[in-house]
Length: 157
Image (cartoon, rainbow, N blue to C red; front, side, top):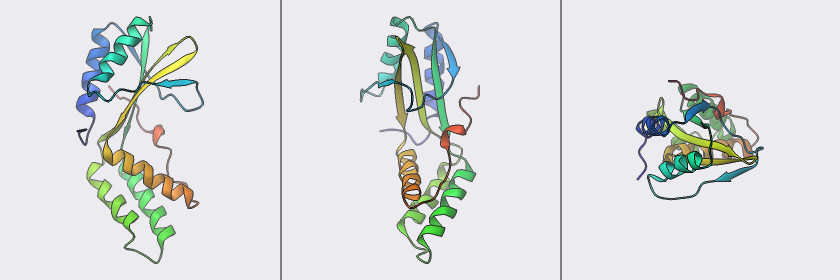
C-alpha cells in the first residue's frame, strides 16, 4: 500500500543514490524524450532501478517530485465549478475538495538515467495524485486548462 506522502520514500532514494556513488540531477523527463519505463510492482523496485543506473555507468540520476500546492487545488476547483455550473454538488467537485488534505505532500516521484540515447525512468505516485491527474484530464477534456504540475519545486534539498 502506497502512503499518502512520498517524502520518506524520497529521503530513502536520496540516501540510496548517494550511497551508490551517483549524483542527483534535479530534472523532469518529458514524454517527448525517448524513454523506457521501469516496470516492477515490488515496493523496493526503485532500488533495482538505481542499481541498473550504476551498472549502466550512469554518472547521475535525474530526480523529480510533485508537491501538491494549495493553488493547484484552488485552480482545479475553480475550473470544475465553472464547468459543472449550476451543479454545485458534482462528484468531481467533491473529489477535488478532498485533495485539500494532501496540500504540501509529495504525490509523484520520477527517477531517470540516460543510456545509449534513451532515458530509463522509474515513476511512482500516490492514489490521491492519480485522482488529481484524472480531475485535471476531466477539466482539460471539457475545455479548461488547469496547471502544469511539473513546474512545481522539483526536489529542494
